[in-house]
Image (tube, rainbow, N blue to C red; front, side, top):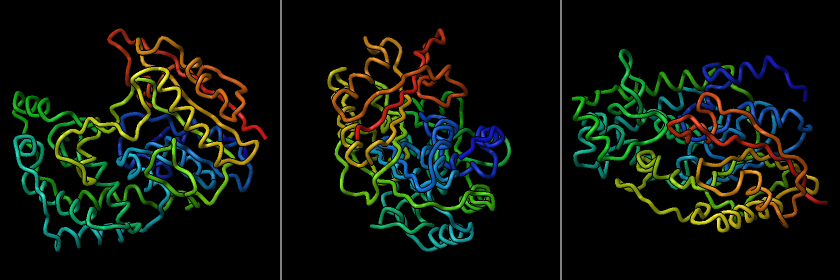
Length: 377
């Protein structure tokens, strides 16, 4: 495939109709869409790609743009729910009709009470959120429209207060992660911030028409799995030609806690759960490297001989005694992958990379790396 610079310009504009679906829900850590797109521009017709840390599905959406089948795994239910929507094509009216039917006919259960919820959402808005939550979490298997509605609500569940048209359902909050309850309540009280009453159906209509437009790329084959990429096996019918991913940096172990409010919407607890059962271990470099090695070994069993592995990786300032290159080399030892090259990925830009989220007050960061390896024949 021939890489066109004009295409890259489009990908850098998240408001462009072809890439709006990729931004269906803001997510705290992500790599830019241009990274997997550049890599996969070298793919051959019929190739397939796998991301064992798929997050919000950026690799999967880049593959879709190029007409490539893609598969992904993530242990975070929020990431899984967002990534699933990246593989779907649907007419807006199907999602809007579903939303209207739920709001008119579903009685919500488990409406949370307490100071946080009183300050976080207008009471009528919270009831509508709970109607959709109750309906979706009662289903064992979701339709395409239900997957899309779930992702759209996750994307508008919390965010900044807007001066004109409401774009989010909550009181003032960040878009990309959920502030903790005590901090949030204190913030709102000190500033006398009141949650807005939002017309849920109108917001869903606007978002659905905006995202699922006529310029979206054609649907491709693929599948997203909620699971542990150290162990997932036997669930794919494909053998992969590419593995493109960005693992959590050593010490980054709060993905689910940072998304606790979205996780609640998906059926989780009203309180922040600090367990990390399905994530890589972060209590020591040795434990982290061992777990990451298990991911590479498991990926190898699902790949064709000669498959290519491309990894973007970094580190948190003052967290690790080893460089990102050292940690990654250690994790790839004896995994079936032959490391070919490692080079610097450059300075983080526009909050699109993990390292940019963890600059210290002096603006320091550890430069990310891109590594390329091939699976032994």
